[in-house]
Image 1 (cartoon, helix red, strand yellow):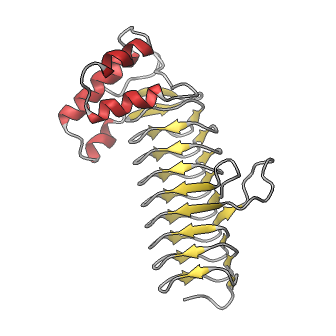
Image 2 (cartoon, rainbow, N blue to C red; image 1 turned 30 degrees about the vertical axis):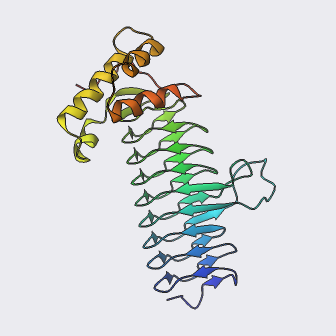
Image 3 (cartoon, one colour; image 1 turned 90 degrees about the vertical axis):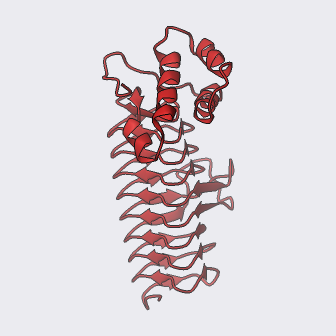
Length: 263
């Protein structure tokens, strides 16, 4: 159902069983799949939105990137299925640098959160109220970004990570970790999150051991990851090591004055 006051560009492709609320504007280059609802006063352009998404009032999706280098290149945003976009969220499309902002399935963006241009967001990601991603940020699967968090451009956040409220994140955060503070430091592992997602005691124990090898053993990071790589590592440890190896910005480290929650 499309409300009589909604404005729909003739190029928009909207599947059946989609609801468009009053005074919503669906601009150029939009594709919306079945089961998705769009709330009142929402503005969408240059976006592909999956099935069964719920978009609340006054969200802005696919809008022009906040980048002075952007010169009206043809870019877009792609959003997966079953995502929730709450009030006043802003999700920008890509720039010529990459062309696409990508968001996976089953994500939730709470009120006033923001995703900048060219970001890549995995599945089952939660961004709490007023959390902000600058451009070119990469977020792994099953990440929780608490309220008022800000993530610097080009930072990567590994899967199953939790960022504490108000964190200012300027370095990469490895998978399975918790980070908080300004500038964000590691405070151990996301043990609660790992248990909720079905990690076994052995898997968690192996991740704890790897974390301690890298950050508390007295080895350099290079020595630590070489040691872990030579130990026939599990899938999780290989992911942990590869993430650190591939970091271009550098990785967040523990702060000795913060409580380590990995115990």
